[in-house]
Image (cartoon, rainbow, N blue to C red):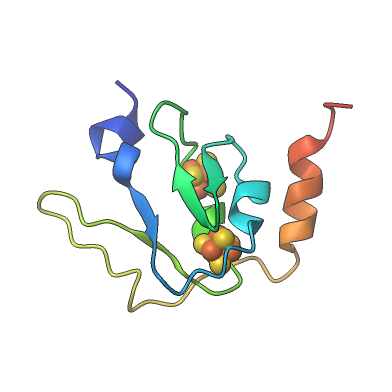
Length: 101
Ligand code: SF4
Ligand code: SF4
């Protein structure tokens, strides 16, 4: 069992009704775990999550949240995000596909 599975990573993330369906989280998810289902991102159960937190920190609307897990409260709805000031979602997207072509 992976760490992300152990802590409930299958349902670790969610986005709320304010999500505008821009699809950036899908494009920058390094593991391919995020797929757009119409206008909303879905974290696919059977795809391994790297726990890189790129989806959380680079959603332009700050709408990706972490679910509470047993005995641990998530505060992502209240807290700010910590994206790298020198990297953009475009940089990450390009890096993701590096070497595949
Ligand atoms: S990046 Fe944010 S706003 Fe865009 S689809 Fe993903 S969760 Fe929604
Ligand atoms: S933490 Fe990283 S690998 Fe996991 S869903 Fe978010 S972007 Fe994808």
